[in-house]
Image (cartoon, rainbow, N blue to C red; front, side):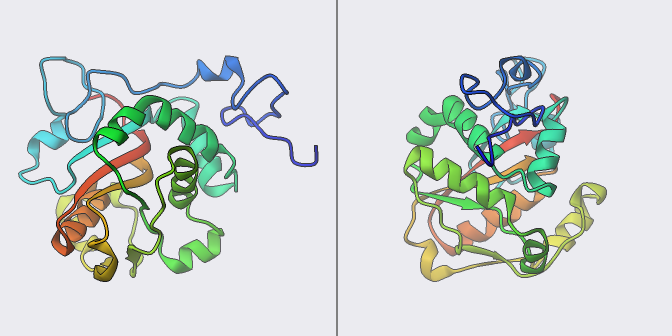
Length: 230
């Protein structure tokens, strides 16, 4: 009664029969649907294509496969903004429920044994008060029973907004930005790396590269949102 749940789209209070989202607001979202890129999970226009244009250009990809719940357009943009910057952490429950609804079979098939949130630089996390990827990871854990491993990957350097950089600049910015605790990584065989938005994929690639260098594991990626179809 003091802190009633709010709709993750319109941010208005939810009624007793509304569930996790207003029925009218659900139609404002754009769930990711087939056909999708076999690597990153972005929607593609033709069912005869295997990869989006970005993934087709990459010579090497370090994570095994990625999935996303929503296209990053329309009402979800403001939803994610509030989730990240306006302390609307309760939205993570809806995001995680939607992810499990769409990808529980995929998660089980890949035998995920740990969920790893993309880490935030400690000073940035202290200023914001939370890491939105970690909040999402913990809600996924509640719904799947898979533990969150929050200390496996640590961000030791802050980085600029990668979407504003070209490929070479992104690579240089991420060099040395993360550390992997090698005494933990060999405890797992299949890891689910989670984040809020998939943009360039550079961060996921760098973390996956370091994880695979540190141990013989599979790395899968799950994001709340991904860019528009290719």
